[in-house]
Image (cartoon, rainbow, N blue to C red; front, top):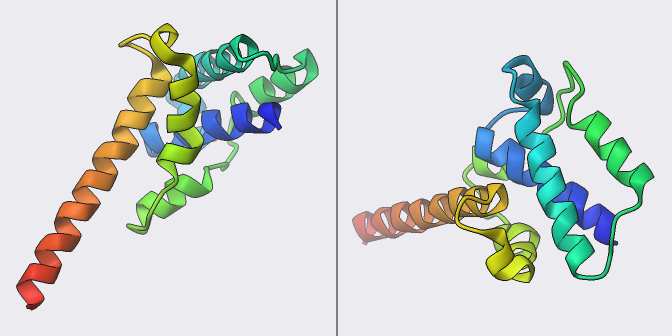
Length: 134
């Protein structure tokens, strides 16, 4: 379960933060951002007592560095259509488990902040729209 969480948090975090598919990140020379986030998420799981197996990490690393891969997280597709996202459940909970170890410059923290800013904007725009209708 933790291996899946590490993979999903990495994929959601990086594709939402960069607003791009994995292959687009690779083409931009930014695959290292995805693997850095993978390493960070895996370290959190390890500190929690659930170290991902090497095979799972290797498989994830191959996927997050695959040229031309059109993979995006469903959370990015939610952002693109202006829908609700599960930032707190997927990224926020993992970040909370990292605690102070995450640090201010954490990739996970940055991705989470990006999604929380999206949620704040969405709420503000929804409230303004509702106020204009009434």
